[in-house]
Image (cartoon, rainbow, N blue to C red; front, side):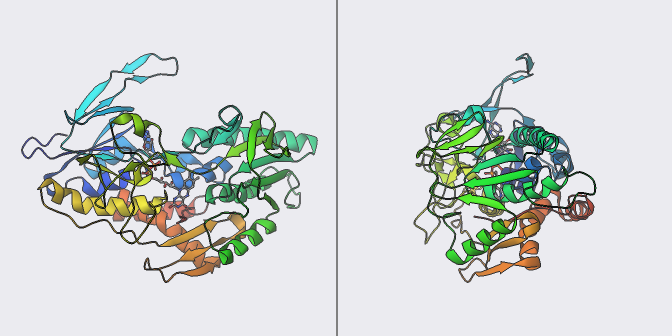
Length: 430
Ligand SMILES: Cc1cc2nc3c(=O)[nH]c(=O)nc-3n(C[C@H](O)[C@H](O)[C@H](O)COP(=O)(O)OP(=O)(O)OC[C@H]3O[C@@H](n4cnc5c(N)ncnc54)[C@H](O)[C@@H]3O)c2cc1C
């Protein structure tokens, strides 16, 4: 784990979309000794969470053991909850591992580094709205997807018995909310009685609420038109200008007093940096709770600490705003850091990170995929149909190749295609 000969120990905190790709590519390079830390034992690629939640894909098909990956790719894996960074001592503190009853299973640990990468991801903020924590599901991790799936199945079983449709209300019309809605429409068919004709809405009502005056603010009008058309095809109701005041046990209530009955409410209203980032060390934090970095992704307070993915607030050259949190950005940062970290460790300068926007695609279950793709240089175009679906799949193929290597990655991709879930649902939305 520790490269004593050269003292080039790289610690990566977080084995998500960005951190795991980096660990896999960096391990073994130029004698760099890589340790990856995650509190989970297995890696689950977050952009597919809504599919696990909807039950259209089983997470067991897609989870990969960090321990196995570490052996396969040549890095060390240390399972544990990151608690604090001691910048002066160049050490990271991990809390003890405990079971559900709080009994200690493994002690707290301290790990030293020469260069640290923070890749701890983000979380869905509740903006202080009442009842979110108690009554809504957020899709931040595998346990949330599992929680939603159980509640959804219960609501559908009740609907089948009573003949009254289950009501799912999703707050937030971003890609997570709209894609989850579309996948739920697929899942509905699994609950229909044998021989029953498919009729959307028979067992399931789906409503997507958006606080802004338009659905999916941030996309252009032409793309939005296509998106709204597809949501209508799927009989998914969208309501705009819906500023939510509270999530009640069985309803969602707006500031203007409107109420939408909800068997299950989903809170998918944006993403901010993990609250832990503010407590880890004395980093500069932006207004979305992310750690500020320079154009080489190094933290503004410590050049031995690099930050990537949803945890990083990076404003690339030519842009006025920090990059939005996407797996697309995390993957490009992993590629960049796999090249630049060995150079930095030799004390040499590196070129700044450049982001190439490959597009924005939204996968809407059986209503297909719509989006915009481009070369990364601004000449993007609107697409839909088979081509869009193929482009949507490309990001996960990239992830599988980077993490598993070309050969194993290709085998995994074929296995994925043959699975009942039919291929990845991987996309590039920004
Ligand atoms: C439902 C959904 C759909 C999405 N779809 C897309 C898409 O189509 N395209 C796209 O580009 N992006 C998509 N995204 C966004 C994308 O998933 C994120 O931008 C991406 O995962 C960020 O990668 P990351 O490595 O920064 O963090 P993450 O992938 O979130 O990984 C963070 C890791 O840190 C670990 N961790 C957290 N805290 C601790 C701790 N204290 N100690 C130890 N380990 C810890 C976690 O276990 C996790 O493994 C989607 C997100 C969601 C929720």
